Length: 313
Image 1 (tube, one colour):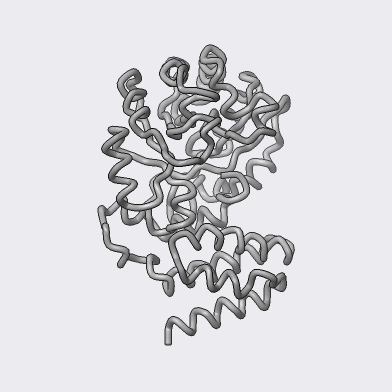
Image 2 (cartoon, rainbow, N blue to C red):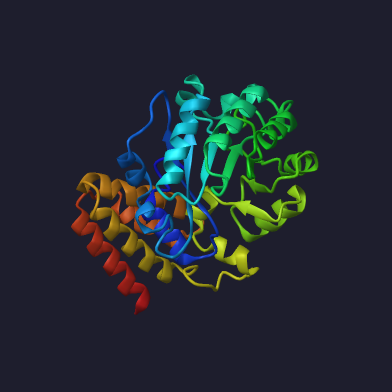
């Protein structure tokens, strides 16, 4: 998720638990082999065996349409120690699609096949190659053909967001279409889209016939969701589910953000996450309102500490 799931957020969410694999924000590939520093910036985990400090592997996500250029960059990422490479065929952003990237590629299954095949042949066999797709661009007519093309190209795993580009992020997600894709491919398929709660997780698994799911916005809103899904815990009474426990994670997150960003950007980064947390935590709304206009990181840190003390007492 561009602008959201950077290495600081990945560290926070994997520390809370329940996550088996992470994917970076997309690295945009145009017509050049990017320098190594770009990959270390997007995925600092490369300096630690390609894993978060909690031991969760992080795949590098590439977005582009040039098969040879994508292949060269995938090979570089692999040589730097990436535990896997992921190809983005799902981004619905207009600016990305206008430049022939993301979901617009789902209009041409043959092109998908060429991209995946070229990347797979250039990378070491030992490095997993996954791909993320939606159910189509304007409609679902090519969904099965796109999935088959990705498999034929040599992908090892397929993540499917259960909506088209046109459907964006509007409910519902069509999880039953993922089951249709599973019927025509043999590679592992992972379901994604509109999973906000443990019950959503169960419903998605049933309708998609998938054993595994990918969490995005739902995990940002409910950071313990992966933990509950992983351990089949329907109760909210688990690590970091309570607001008081989550405040400790918010403090660690903001301290890390302050260490890497300009003051104004650091404040905005925290508020961005709080907007997601408001969906699941009523307490988050009150806290967000209390710092909405504040830009001074030190004063925000003090507000977090004060809020924590309130709940501890």
